[in-house]
Length: 229
Image: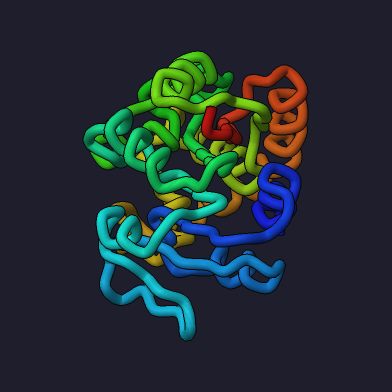
């Protein structure tokens, strides 16, 4: 699992890890197998992982003591006040602790090319968007020092190219995404099938574009690792 390897590189020796907005908990399970003592926050009460505490918010998690590593995988863009959130996370980290934040890259080629058709724009669920510069500046202004960065997550980037291109050429957005995630389609079965075929045909070019945009540091996803100053 790429995220598990990334955390090993960014944070080093396992300790206490908090995953903010842990979703179904799959990353927490993977981190625990790597030796981390894990906990998460998730507003959806249905999230449950045996032997792993899941808190409803940051305040609950903060009362449990400090953490050696805090992760936010595609969560910060949903937060109404991201700067205040980052400041609180800093107070929750142990001295020398690591914060890892992943967000869609508003400065990447996908965002610039597709504009309102970009899959990861996702308005109104995404309240904020960040470039490498704006995210780095916010972290620095909140008492962090950036020390590493990555410019893609393969699954997000590849599918971002495919669905964004389909959005730009179709009348209804995110048809393939909705079909793959089990949502009720807003188009006919024939149109859904056409999106499946077109998406499959685009897989090869999407992989190539993901590689090229990553090398150019203009991928669809931005991941930053920072330490408490």
